[in-house]
Length: 430
Ligand code: GDP
Image 1 (cartoon, helix red, strand yellow):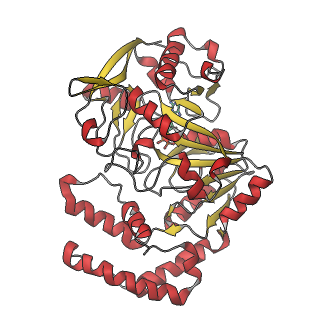
Image 2 (cartoon, rainbow, N blue to C red; image 1 turned 90 degrees about the horizontal axis):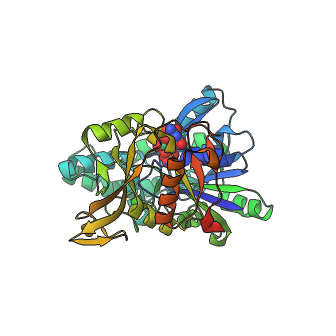
Image 3 (tube, helix red, strand yellow; image 1 turned 180 degrees about the horizontal axis):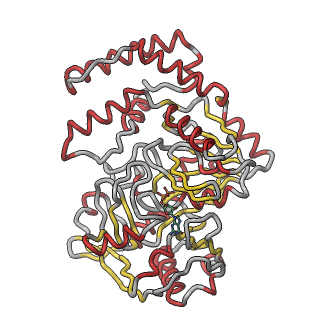
């Protein structure tokens, strides 16, 4: 069976922890989109890890980790991560890299930086990992697949031609140093040495695994609202963050994805620019940021302080709908234990009208939140294993949100650790 673990919101919902937990019973974990621009934080017996490229299954000896064709593969970052994981005592993971995955080229990172500089105040808040230039080139058909490393003559030819067009921009738009194809070629030959033992036809591997009845997890990066089609365009990422794209980015039949675990955090956070209707500021935001996640809400890749907000039912319901959530994993609920009262955004007001449907970007910019306040539980819920043992107000908070979402909350995460989870039967599944 294939399960996808994806985000309902802006990312940082705690997908890494949920994937790590579900990986215990999985055979294969696949990354199917995105690149080293976002990270998962995972806490386990080996320590605390921020993974950007490796799938969250790497900590288990029994799983195979796959970098799917849909990923923006930054080879040096992947290998640095691999070394880091192994140096902290984790056994060498079984890793497969799709021969059709495309590589983040050294110039993609440069172009990302130069474009942010050029846009200055009007930038998209890129992490400067080369992701947007990478996907632009992929769809302009001037990207490089991993398999091209093994065809040196044609590789150098193509590289020269690509550098010709890139150099026009470097010279005349950005006024920066020009690219030398031979230098990039030499770098690519280093990449080749690194990836050679791992490269194969991963979609064939997965096809056979499906036939053998293996448990497969697709691990998404970011969340619905960062999807280039359905998110808050243009403040989005450059590859689809939806479970549906898992079929493409891993190369598996769409009908094999039977479960879509959609992760949503018990409050909101976002990085980068863009409308964020339930955003809070000042001391209220600082306190939530300090207490949030595991050691504060700061970007796993960038260390940037995240923007904070209360739970947004409108955005999350939309997020679950576009993912096709079969299960909602409601995470980081323990963090809210300090509050006497908890505000929740239940609708938006746009041009005087109240709506519970998530609008397109221009309207979203005008939206103001309609808030309701629920009583807090004002205690620590970490360590609780059964739903019935949660304080009544905590259960009421979960049930209130489930009703607003219209999707079943079947998992509640009450701590960063792998086993800090409460499984729950939802009435919506009855
Ligand atoms: P991801 O990118 O969706 O995996 O999310 P991040 O890893 O960026 O953010 C999640 C943060 O919250 C990490 O620091 C996790 O260790 C932490 N975390 C995940 N679930 C829980 C939880 O239930 N409670 C607490 N306190 N922290 C959690």
